[in-house]
Length: 283
Image 1 (cartoon, one colour):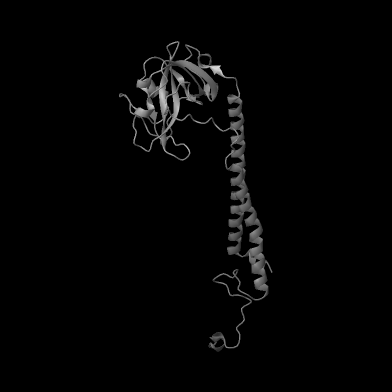
Image 2 (cartoon, rainbow, N blue to C red):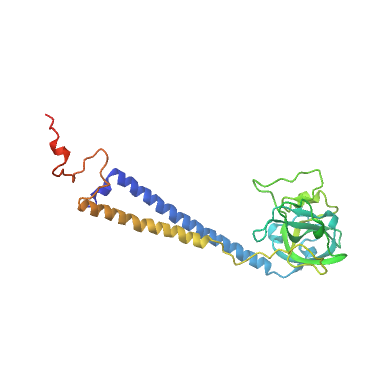
């Protein structure tokens, strides 16, 4: 009953289904690898955030111009200094809860004279603002202590926007500390601080501080892996059923998909009234 499955067209079909199954399984395993990577990153992030809060001056000692990303990424710090609102800039294209907006980046002059860029938080911006709007330009007066997470300078990706040089900008495409250093007086630290809570005496309105990173979000990788494995199971289980149906139809004398266009169907017998019975026989 299943000899038809050895015909060339069916062999191509078998190979195609096999390739689909291998691809689906491979994609499922790839998603599981991505899940393991995500879990490892979450564990590393949780370990960094759980470290004791330190003073920024201790994390980046004076005279230490080079710091590694592992040293400063997502470290909880405090810093005391005085804001420089005249040097504040927007960081464009930063959405929050699916709403368009920007970050407000303000330099903070520390007691040792060095300067650190502080991300005071998010404001709604649908494109109308190319500089920090007046209502969000006010900062706490005098000396202020900020609490937040440190991050290294952000770098441009392959297709990211480029900020021009040689002019003073009121907005940046990213927290590019090298570019910001061109227009900030003093020694700018190679890290920036993301506020996790408003400063004492913060004016109203103030930018909304960003939420700390989520350490238990594993993303959609597990569900994607389940979907790919499900597709593979459907192909493995469904294809034999198709072969069985075709074999049963052949056994009942039904349509035979296995017969090629250039091959007669051995089961095809003309019935009475078939025009082929009246066709003249060639000598």
